[in-house]
Length: 97
Image (cartoon, rainbow, N blue to C red):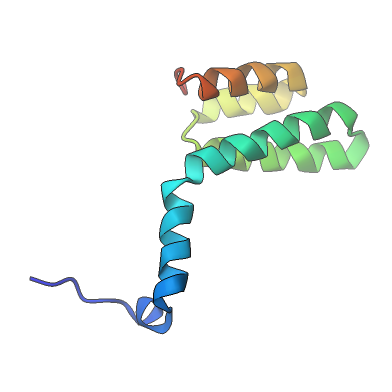
């Protein structure tokens, strides 16, 4: 039986559907790249900007299915070196817990 397309899928062109599909296929790679950028930014940031960066880090880690306890520990530590270590671990295919 054919799957019925939702109204939003019907409104998208084939090209747009392809872009969306590729985004979700490569989401993990995109999140890892984003985390790499955020690590560098965290080393340079101070004050409120640093807090906002940690919020973005937490969101990216959540999208990568890292455990909430580990995310909380990283954010509370406010140490970019810990995040860099986790990023290296995730890039090598290590555990997410």
